[in-house]
Image (cartoon, rainbow, N blue to C red):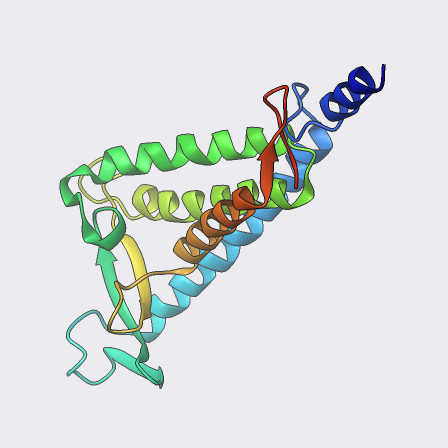
Length: 188
């Protein structure tokens, strides 16, 4: 009897619910929207402040601290400037990924996981909007604006920070969860 009660409790507290919650949906949309707003605002500021070009030219870069500098770079590809000819595909995938993350957030009871999904959605939308709004020669052919440059790591932006930090946090959290007897993920 006790074993079946344990399984019932685990099933009721499942991380991902089968039902869609409008409240959780709008929470995720607001979080993702905030990420998009900060990302697009910082990109707009960098476009107005920095010159595109070599950092040896005045106004092209701003040294901040240590090796950190602001350096305006346009990336037509994916991470680390790979896949430059696949910009439109990457853009389409970013919008699909954002929608999927919002739906997962609306079905997730765990607050931290729900916010992780929303942050990933916001980052994907931020970079996807660059491809959509800055397209000159075709649908989703625009380049993503990057400006945070440590000089020893590829140049990135706020959307990239939201995605990478959220994925890293999800990976770390996965080490602290365990799989229960009925196949569901439970808390350690």
